[in-house]
Image (cartoon, rainbow, N blue to C red; front, top):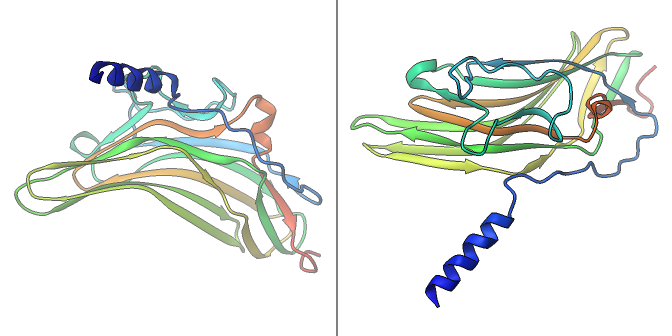
Length: 232
């Protein structure tokens, strides 16, 4: 009986995907100008082969805008303080547009959620307090208007000679942000960042980005909408 239960559990695990495709929720896009995708960056993360992680190339692969492990046994990108130092490691996607007129705007997420799978590991020692953490950050910035939002995904803390691990998995819904008192014709850039940080430990990213079916969707993640009575 016990063996049968174990086998049923393992079969259920095998049928459960590590990541599922998520299509964007319907949004009222009246008056919204979609933002073109601009660029990406990877800082202080390395791939399974030990080479620095590269940026996302702008094309959808395996239903993904972002980074994915080459196989289930590897991470797409890892950051280890033993080799990579104490500065935070970053995976970043950028969108950019020009502010059409003076005024305030809503930076609208067009129904897409950002997904992240992986783990943080804090390695303790006989002396000191140690941590490893991961968060997702959205920054919108021009010369005269800014907005920021952040969500912690995982935190592992330890005091003493032990290791602590915290996993993160799933999709995070992005809120609309208000950017106020913008100036016409100024570039406005939106950065979606995965930030991994540790003072003694490791951050592994198996998958980070947006679920998408086609290249056209990369230019439809965010949009800019004038706030009523403010843009002129």
